[in-house]
Image 1 (cartoon, rainbow, N blue to C red):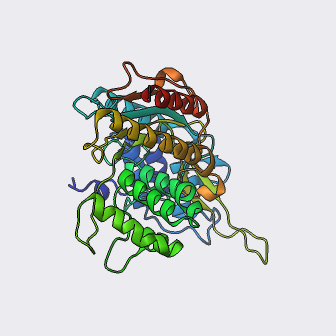
Image 2: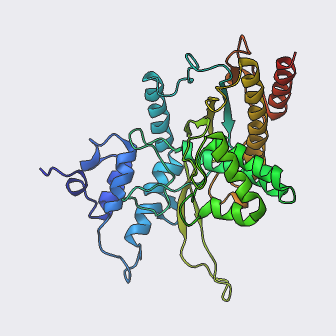
Length: 375
């Protein structure tokens, strides 16, 4: 008996591929579906090229034969075994309190929680960094529970990009407004990417987009954080994102065609989170850059931030998308959900959580809160 999982159960024949995906033979003791999917990457039997069936080993492990869905395609797409395993893992996470609503106890006045369920209207695509997998494009999954998810960093990056497009870029003709919006975004999301001796990334892009506003923006940062000239702060933002775990995964294939011959080349298999999959979006805001204001003023600032974030989320989730290939329409959601599963709570303002069933209702709820705060 060996002591390495991959060498002990390495796939070495076509029969091994069949037994592994069906959970029979020498693989019957491997009950975890994700582990069986990982073992498909060990396929090592000889290429059948030149023989009657002409089945390439890796292609067979990915999708089986032409008319019979099998192997990874059987696990993920046809038998739905992977989805059953995902729902079992989600139940385990719920029992361990890993998916409970964030608590606002102890947070300062003006902090708020925004939570609502999301249902995909277009597939979601991401790419995992797992080193061993039978296809090159697995969807990103949690390392422990192997549940597909979108990370907090992905939420943050996508929302920041959308709000930059809608709130900052249109103001290039007004230098002060451009710098003020850019400063506000830094407080919300934290230091921009590329803040180095030689600016890169977003810092360089925004500096070049409106050069006249670059120094105004830097002056605002230095004044707010009381820094010497030439020194810029590295800060965290007031927005704190949580991962969204999806309850389903599927498998797709695209076959690029040669533009000259019109013939297909090599089919590309990739995993997706399909239309109809559900998750929960959670976002917590802590106004630690407004702590020097009174409670009333801090709540006013918090509600202004909430209003701009809600507008950005609506554009992100209904128009732009938050998936890979979002320019092709991937990663958008349905604009309706169960209101009882939603929650908006503001410390120091709301006695009980507000509920909403779509973005229009959420925007109206925020407007009512803003009017109540100025009374």
